[in-house]
Amino acid sequence: MNLILLFPEDMVTDERARITGRRLRHVLDVHRAGVGDDLVVGLLGGRIGRGRVTRLDEAVLDMDVRFDRDPPAKLPLTVILALPRPKVLRRVLHSLSVMGVGRIVLVNAARVEKSYWQTPFLAADAIERQLVLGLEQSRDTVLPDVLLKQRFRPFVEDELPAMIKGSLSLVAHPGGVATCPRDVLGPATLAVGPEGGFVPYEIEKLVSLGFTLVSLGERVLNVETAIPALISRLF
Ligand code: SAH
Image (cartoon, rainbow, N blue to C red; front, side, top):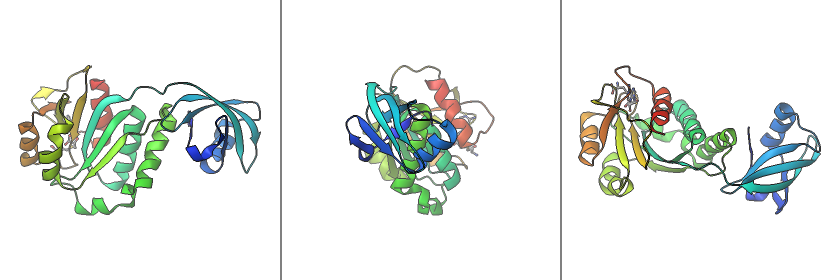
């Protein structure tokens, strides 16, 4: 936890915060902070600053806080991800949040197991938990937007065209014709397939909207490896 993310309900006044629970435990056990120490804090959706510890015991951590800088800019990137299996989903949400992705769309695809949509990890609070852990890791305060699209075709036909306007649109595909570009300057949309890959119909649909197939080579990577590798080439 490189930043303690503060929620509106943690703020006792504009300049004083009180935290308990997981974050308190972390400060006690990992930071091993004491009264008078400064901790990096950020207000959810807002600015970053310092919290000076005024009380710290097994029950509460009180801080005088001062916010003086903006969080890092989000990547102008939308990741469209075929819903992975629950354990992978959790880790991928965390790493997308760490990397600063602005928007995440979890979409159905032919090779997504139907049961994956029933996982408790898709509940709003479970998603937020992973995203918050990512923000705390990367010293950010702004949650990425997460959209769930349980039907591929209506999403792609009715919503995706407007979503990709003005963005470079790419489908990651092992062995795809073009190599994934580096250092794109503007907004981008990156579609990543399920474990079994996108089926030809899905690829054709995306290509018909203007998506380009891009590859990191012939090696078939798992989603968790492919995503950070793709993002770090793009930005
Ligand atoms: N058997 C599938 C592999 C899917 S891997 C197939 O051959 O298509 C899951 C997803 O990770 C892929 O759909 C793709 O989006 C991404 N991916 C994996 N390896 C990749 C590579 N070498 N280049 C680009 N994307 C890759």
